[in-house]
Image 1 (cartoon, rainbow, N blue to C red):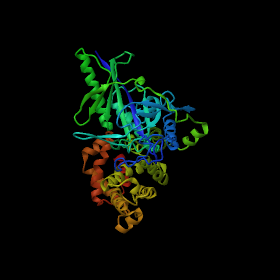
Image 2 (cartoon, helix red, strand yellow):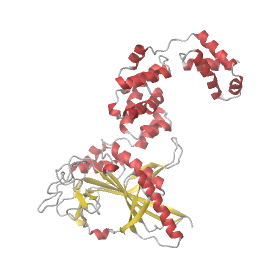
Image 3 (cartoon, rainbow, N blue to C red):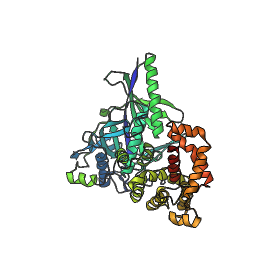
Image 4 (cartoon, rainbow, N blue to C red):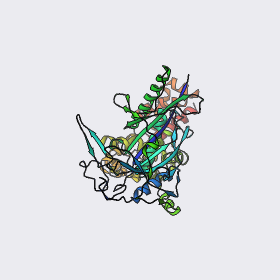
Length: 485
């Protein structure tokens, strides 16, 4: 029997705020254990929670970016469970009246065409709700220690519909969602720091069946790659169980990304097990239109919308857009340089950024913000190449020095003597004639319609010109001579 996978993801995103969800104590990572605490975090008797408006702003903004309906009224609930990392023995969360409903995350399907018509899919969301994070258990050989620094940090849970059909789709979903959260300034989404955590609900069913199978939840998926690997592993495990006549049990399983194995943790809880009830210490929140519009004005362009615009406005190829759009700062740098150079030179600008700027940044271990090459300087370099003042090889040398010093490209070129000398038209034509006469095979191929065969003549011409000939002039001269041959 052929089976298909049905996957839904629950993604927890720590919101980037200065203070915690219901108290003024600071949020943060990397501090000494149990230093970011106060009576509210530790749930000492008599303390009362106070809402963090910055966290509410962030979750509403996230909902607007993802096309959610923002509830006019949402409320707070207590989710009861007894575990050492929750000092109150309950978590303040949202149950039946979350702040965001619906929405979707756009993904690019794995293996789709790498151009503007690549196949995309919209993964619908069920809800986004706001809650507080719990502490962290650090397990030793003989004991476990609790660090409450994370407890109380604003935490957004984004719940998808069971609309994903493969581990690769889940990977694409998380990649897109993470980029949206980072570009929107909602979270840094560093999985190593626990700022983005994912639980996956996986079931399988016969192809063509609409009823959902018994789902298994995978936890402890602490990288996007481990999410993909864990889901693939669980799909195979469930298929193997059914193949030998077994039954899938609803449970929570732990996946070890290092070993590629999973083990059962516990039977899966149901909503009634948590005994939700409205929090008596917190009032419901009313969100009016003015609040939403103020936050909507600060929402950035989504990555795939930006990619479609780059295809249309700049005629950029997929190889460039697929790098630029996933980093907001890089995309804004590109647009500033392309605007300075002119839209007709946008592809050249993109090539310099993707191939040269990113290489130099990577080798130097620097961030884009540390680059000494300003967008307008890169635009100037592109113009110098386009007008023939600099040949490509010389421009590469100029760029390396620009990156190191921040000096303007024209100044570097003059100081280093790298500006191209005008090539004598008669000498260029003679070099081209000699190159054509010396390669009958390439000449025949070009005449028969193989345009790329012209490249076989360019090397000898550039060698004769000692690398100083203008490539555009070389190409034009070769084509003129071959056409008249």
